[in-house]
Amino acid sequence: MPHLLCLGDSITDCGRLFDSPPLGNGYVQKLSRKLTANGQHWKITNCGVDGFTIARLLSNAEPFYLPQKADIITILIGINDIGLMMNTRRTSAQQKEMLELALKHYEELLHVLARSDTRFVLMEPFLFPYPEEYKTWIPHVRSLSRGIGTLAEKYRIPYLLLHEELNKKASMQGIHTLTTDGIHLTDTGHEILADLLYQHLTASLLHR
Image 1 (cartoon, rainbow, N blue to C red):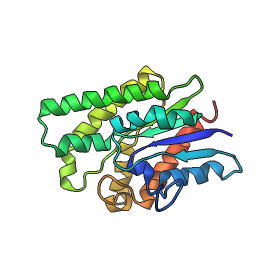
Image 2: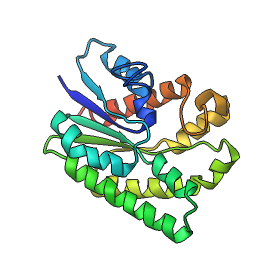
Image 3: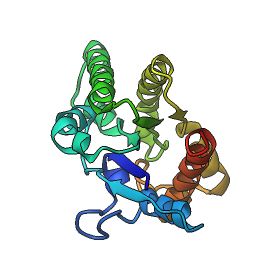
């Protein structure tokens, strides 16, 4: 039975600890339904934690996530790092340093979690231009995305791009259809994310 471990922040957590244990009520739960729809047997663990940054995820990796011995690990993290950069009155130079440190931590995370048979899917952090102030965040989200993409290329890890795809769907269906606040997803948004991840898993990993 393959074990899928989903790591991330509140977008992954989605009430898994209190409201809807153990998978939450977001994309992880929806992905679980898709993966098991045809009678396939999966162990799926949601370890997303509300408020986590890349550094917090790294600090928990060795004691809590490495012992899980997952076959496939998905990682969706980074938007809280951008929030810290933008909400703490940092200079441009300080923001650049924070971004570089976040990517350093991301690379360390991959090294800590990697086993010989571990497969990863890195998921792009995303943001919607709502409210208006988030438009100033988007260039930093793109910079973080490029950095994660470089790591994915370096280690030959699949990278699921989400920012443009989700924003395209939001422009077609209405932004409030996909997001509650510009960062978190509605039920429809989670369904779309689960579909994208399911397609990516089945195309690039499960049939290898």
